[in-house]
Structures are given as structure tokens and as C-alpha cells.
Length: 114
Length: 109
Image (cartoon, rainbow over all chains, first blue to last red; front, side, top):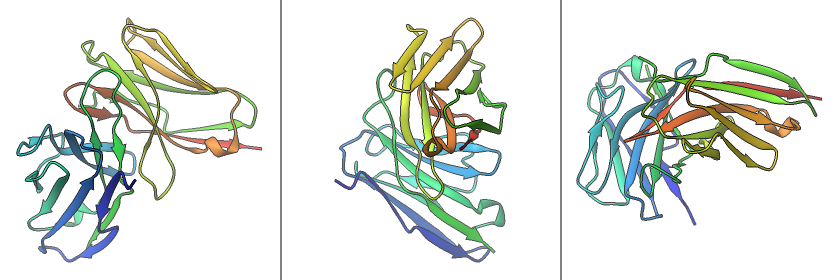
């Protein structure tokens, strides 16, 4: 039972390059999220999705795009990477929001932009 | 503007003693809160939650208290163990999951 899987686990990009981070979940969850973790900033929500074909902006969406073409996958794209996007990225999924629900997280992607 | 705040970036506690981690929130409409634990190089894992209809929820060594009038919640770990050393995040579950900045707990022998 894989849960939430993130690909890749590590990546180094040059400024201006593009890349896509893949998140896959096998729990049939409706909700999926992308967070970034930076020292002293906690986990900040980038984008999220409440179901297949939907996306919404979180706290820090600038410089990122997302797509949810299939229920089990949530892709995070960086069109033109900047050093400020150096961070650890976490994907999460949950069955639904509200009472008695928890989100399950992937192991993270450490991205360095030089 | 931070809607969920953890004002103590770190806490050091002796093994066997109580650890108390605090969290404040700004929106009185938040009605469900969770605590997550994170070890280095791993994703956060769910620890315990509380609904706004309760003021306390207990699970083994972990107890979460909610004071709605003060918009404050706290996580108590009793007794603390070295394996509890991690970063703890509180989160509010609304139309999305909003996290605080985290508190690094170190439990020393």
C-alpha cells in the first residue's frame, strides 16, 4: 500500500529551467494539496484540488501551475524556476475536508534552484 | 497574514516530563484542528485532532486541549520520550488545510 508517492525525491535546476513534480495517491482521495516547507515558515499551501479536473490557489501560488487530469495524480509545474523556489515540496491527499479527516503526506521533493 | 501561529520555534524537555506545545489561530470560524509530527527527511504524519465541539481529546500519551474563546490549542505529551523529538505542526482544517510554522521539540535523557 503505497499511499502518497512523490517523484522525483531530489532535483537541482538552473534558473529559468522548467520541471514538473508528480504526486500520485492510491487511496481514492478527492482532495490533493501541494505545500512547500521553508525554514521558519512552516508548511505553506501552494495549490490544491477538491476533485478531478479542479484546482485552486493556496497561500503562495505565484510561479507555479498545477493540473489534476486524473483523480489519483496531482502535478506541480514550475515554468521558469527561480532561486526563491528552492524548497522542500510536499504533496498530500485527503478523503474530504472538515470533521474527522486527516491528510496523508508524501515523503517530499527537495528542489534546489541555482 | 498567518492564520495559524506557533510562537515557540523550539522546546527542550527532559525525558519523562511533560511537553506542552502551543498554537493560536485567528479565525473563530475554524472548527477542526489537527496536530502533525515530522521527522527529518520524512513527510508529516497525523498525530491527533480535535473538533470545536470538544475542549479535549486524548490518545495515549497525547492530549490536545482547545480553548475557543482564546482561539488557542495546545498539545500535551506525557511522559515525553526521546522518540518524540521532531517538529510538530498544528493545522486548521477549513476549506483547505492551513498549517502553523511548527515547533521543534527535543527530548533529552
